[in-house]
Length: 265
Image (cartoon, rainbow, N blue to C red; front, side, top):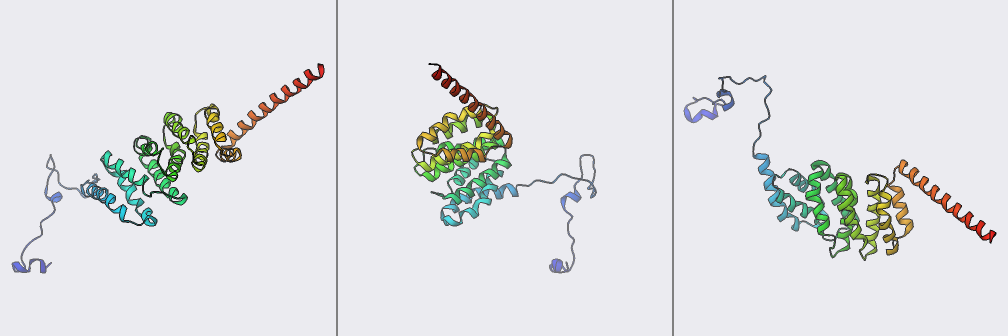
């Protein structure tokens, strides 16, 4: 403290901060025991804006194998930036983080999108994350179309039922018309992930035609069945078993009647 006032012969004083000097509307003074709201400043927002401006310039110069290390920064900027256009640009950058992502890289990207969906809610997931899916549904690279299929299955639970039953199902339906077998298998897998989320028991009829298309396209029936069973709850499996028993019973009765008529003739 002495060094602070050395140039003034050791004389001087330290001014109190403004919150101790200022008075309120009714001349009230600062009360150290009072519970006051946290004062918000522009420092945090400014840091987010700087981060959002810098990330698109940094990403292309980071080695592909190390780009996943940027995900926490990208997710934070997307979640907290106030401008929707900037968020859209960063979300697009996140979805396209790697040109041709392998299975592990797709897993890392999808984990980031799922985490974002949990934090930002249904509306922002539908308006900011979903557009990345339908924009790349016809992408040249199979890996990107597989990422689209994976997005449908894993983001479905964070969307409103009406969006899930219409838009997401429509995207999967378009992927089922894809010519690449690995994309078809990805669509089949994620379609079975969506089945338990459909409202009402008519979900089996909603996807019956899609499953038939997958089977005709060359996807193994065993693959489809196993993916379906792995994503069903116990109650749904019981319902399915009951339906199969009823169908078998009807076929059995029809078969016995056919034999009886044949013998009668």
